[in-house]
Length: 340
Image (tube, rainbow, N blue to C red; front, side):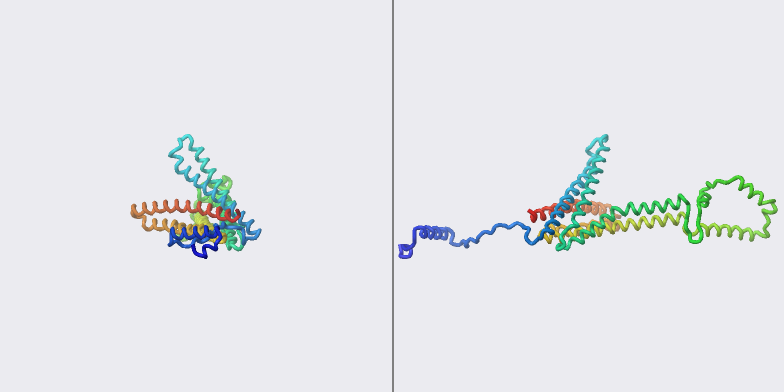
């Protein structure tokens, strides 16, 4: 044994021998690096107000998750129920499906309302507010719009009043057109007395004069009726209803787009890049689902192509629904990891 080894203490000699043994056992091994423990997301970097907002958003995502579950139950019951349940239980099955759909709708409204409390620094608050406003407009507009159209129709066909600028068309014209005008016998006697003799009836100098009188009567009736008769009012009502339908579609598009972008920004704020990308992927799937009906309209003449487009739409719809559920769940879990 050399002098250097002789001067070492027994503990140092044992440690040196163990090191030499490990090197001899695997001379090509790299030095072991210290293992760092995985640090979970913490509440550092968030103030108290932001933590409270994130807690509310977590509850909102949780409600949206359960709303999606109830919606899936409603769809499954509606589609598969009639093939499984006996006919005498279809009424109860329908009530169960309707109940699940109502619960899903209520949870979805409340959950979206809670998301508007997102932290300001996430740049998702205004997007969630806009999406929630569009959602409320979609829910309220059908009642307000159809009530307006119904009131307009009642004013037209019940009271029979058509505002036509300088003149109006009262209910007697409607009754005359339907052949249901009740004739007062005294007024009829007065008319017959005023007519006089047969010579008075035929007191026209020529046939042209009679034609002029008939044309004047027709022109007078047409002027009193005006351009806003029943048919015009009907087409005007249909035009308003179609415009309201397009407005509903536009509001739903704005709602979904702003919700997806807001969710992506909120997940980026809490450092959950996977769920942020999943939220944006919903937009891509949604665009594909919107394009498929257009393709079916142009290429649907062939039965095979129409069947392929239908199957593709069904598969993409299932993927879309599953991804929405996981987006809700991912948002809830991401915020829960921060809150602890």
